[in-house]
Picture 1: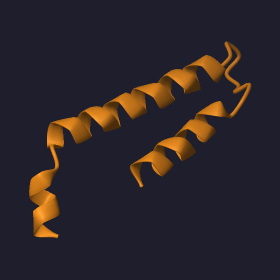
Picture 2: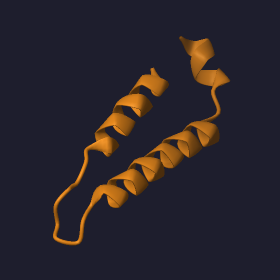
Picture 3: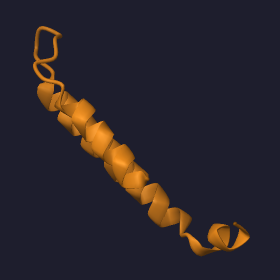
Picture 4: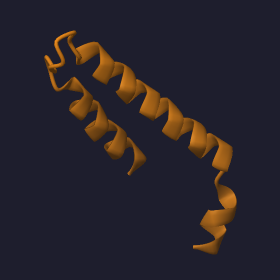
Length: 55
């Protein structure tokens, strides 16, 4: 376990998390309409894929 902690790059991990968050935010905003309702739930699919990718 101690070897793993020394072998990952925190900047790369942070960048991956931020890019994933921005992607989810962009998909969410594209599904949002002007009257305040969501047309689709595509952002939930993206969240599932991001979680699967981190595992």
